[in-house]
Amino acid sequence: MRSAMRLCSGHMRRLLFVHHTPSPAMQAMFESVLTGARTDEIEDVEVTVVPALTAGAADVLAADGYLLGTPANIGYMSGALKHFFDGIYYPCLEATQRRPYGLYVHGASDTTGAVRAVEAIANGLAWQKVRPPVCVTGQPTRADLDACWELGAILAAELTADS
Ligand SMILES: Cc1cc2nc3c(=O)[nH]c(=O)nc-3n(C[C@H](O)[C@H](O)[C@H](O)COP(=O)(O)O)c2cc1C
Image (cartoon, rainbow, N blue to C red):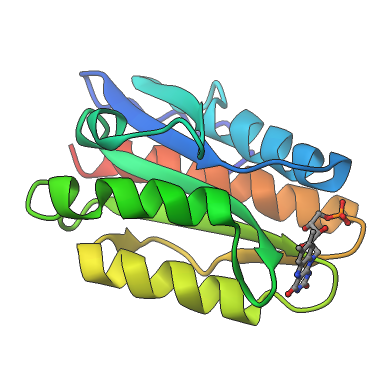
C-alpha cells in the first residue's frame, strides 16, 4: 500500500470511522488507522471520524464503508461501541448491506470475545469484512501500528475499487 500506487474513483466516497479511544495505546492505534485511511495514495475518499458514543444512524447511512475501533472490555466490545450498534442496527439494516468494514481491537490480554461480538453484529447487518481484524494486546509495536495503517488504507482503497 505504501508504493507509488494512486487510486482514484472519480467521485467522492465517504468512510465513517467509529471508535472508542480511552487510552494512549488506543490513541496510537486510532491515529495509525486514520493516517492510513487518509493516505494521499487514495483519492476521492473522505474520512469522517465520530466517537462511538455520538455516532448515529444518519452517519452510517451517509457513508459507503466503516472503520470500527474498540477495546476489549470484560470479554466483549466496549459499551460505547455496543451503544452505537444498538442505535443503528434496525435503522440501517436494509440500506447498508454488503458495505465494507474493518475492525481493530485492543486489550490487556485477550481480544477474542470482543472480535466475536463485533463480527456477530456486522454479520447481522450483512457488512463485508475486507480483512481480518487487527488485534493488539499490551503496548502496540511498530508492526502493530503498521497493521493499523494498512487497515485504514485497505478500507479506503476498497471504497475506490467498488465504484
Ligand atoms: C472494565 C474493563 C474490562 C476489561 N476487560 C478486558 C478483557 O476482557 N480483555 C482484555 O484483554 N482487556 C480488558 N481490559 C483492558 C482494556 O482492553 C484496555 O485497558 C484497553 O484496551 C486500553 O489499553 P491500555 O489500558 O493498555 O492503554 C479491560 C479494561 C477495563 C477498564
